[in-house]
Image (cartoon, helix red, strand yellow):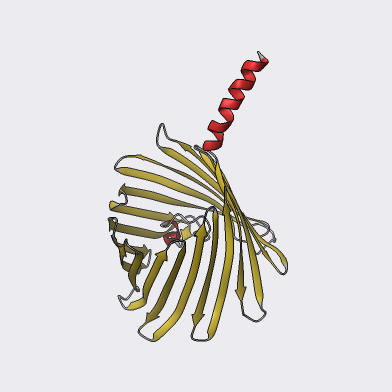
Length: 297
């Protein structure tokens, strides 16, 4: 009997190992402000077929600044994904829960937030927020998506699904923002437009275009943003070149008044190791420098 169990275990362990992956990394952010600041972020992520967990710890010269935790679980049989996250700064700041699913070509979801509006580690002042997410299609191809925010602002941060950029909770559970996003993409190009409205009217409108050459991999992009008065608020031009294992990129932003900032970055990826750096300048000089590494397993 023991021999049979051992044989089953030896067969099962490689199968489970094939479904498991993860990464661990660290990055340093230098800002030559007054006073000079240095932030260190430690990231750990583990993924399996049906779920995963991700942690990001931010430290400064003064100690712990923030802790972010995300957990997700997928139910492919019914096409539903659950995701929840906790934020501490360093005391409790926010809890988030999302449910997303759909029946092709439609998808829908909702984000629920419980946040603390009080100053850091002071007497809590809780509020709640809700974001409704509706969509049609996907990329590559045609994508239409709308977000409705109640008690939250900056819902534009949810478009890229980056867990480290998030909405901003505000007092009260009222309508704050509505965002509409359309994209049309293929292997070599992508067009998109994004429009955000608040209870006061238009917040901003954004138009973007990217074209990609495949041999070698070169991507040219342009984005312009209009403000609530339909005046030009921001133009960003980007260029990225990848000649494996090295990638370099440059992004330049300006408006009618002139130059705003310039960002340049470098990525080197080989085997299961990623090294990267980014530097941003503005008219006053150096704004920040970030560099880090990531190990994947």
